[in-house]
Length: 264
Length: 254
Image 1 (cartoon, one colour):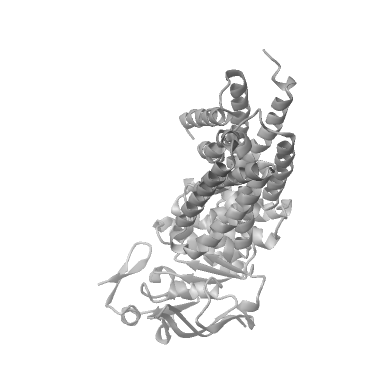
Image 2 (image 1 turned 90 degrees about the vertical axis):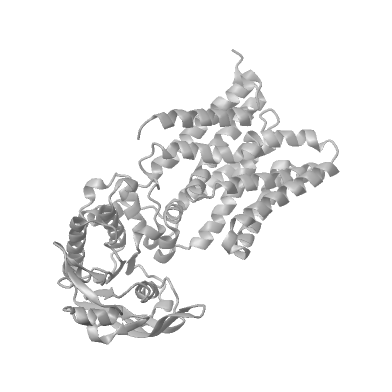
């Protein structure tokens, strides 16, 4: 067996992958329990517009997608207030806006189409040092923020109304959490791919719900499942020459299937 | 001494008047029941008292201070009707749910201490649910769940506890246990209790005062605990028959 870690790009992929495998289910568990699973999907489509802009302007696409996704997350919050009776509208509008802009920008940049495939389906060979530094620093920001706001996020997720009455600053925390989700999507897209980012946020949490006996356990198992999925997915992708995003998500689905067999 | 005072409270949704010029005083240590037909404004009144709704006009005062000027409201606790905002499949354990009662008091970025956890277990002990601390809340019965929510309200050591129809959907035995707990909290811990309820005859020997509401107003005639069917008929707006069950009575449209 070839020593997979002797390759520089594989070491980068594993470092980036391990951070992503923690932050995706961490933010994802809260989203799933708040019935907001679709937000990850919306933001990942918008992230593509950021990638296209980065390719066109010649800056690091991960960085440009982070900026665009943050702007989009503010847009969603804004639209959600405007159309407060039909809050899903905001998700649909932002998703189509993201795709439309991505396609236009791509058609403007010749040769960008090949590059964007790495972001659509995920890639391990094209992860750069800058990507690793971005993923590592911002990933730590996401993890630390969630640890610090854990109890408030738990209360809001469980019962937003009661949290508000008890005096927790719900709207500030919701706003900050949207930023954390946006960061997670932009970072995770690098390896898992835009089309499958939300799968890594949702599936491990869904599997975890089947066996967890507390909220803490839900988060713990979701991260464990995601970690196993990302690592085995990267291995499979390396040895069998498959897309990393597809391999990771299929492994996570397999785990979910196995967990479902177990009776609670 | 008055703990809560309502001065000329009115409330309207769009043009629909829900509450009409209500004034009311509740003293420290009282156990008050608010009764009245559906749509009489009971729950709206409680929501205004806890600061969840802002009245169209009028003031809510606690110890003479306007509620709008009170930042730290952890002395007020509210157990809403559970069916509204509760997701039974949520993966939280009983102890996690009860711990939420301390979060706001604790403040941002701070972890719960060992002493906090002792208080959480103490609250669970009061409502007789300590044995279930590691259970998933989705596994509990309606009565057990209600007790967990009361424990969540108790950990922050409130001076006043509001409950909105706490006995809805729970069986007679659990209901009895729940009232015993409330009475204990009122008598032994000195917590003022305000409860919205339909179970008029189950509460008459437990509460210190009954407030009757109809059509957004307080009916002054029935501030006693020994109501007759005639007085209730006036409140409910239709003839009322007192049906004594083995455990309590209830109001029925006859």
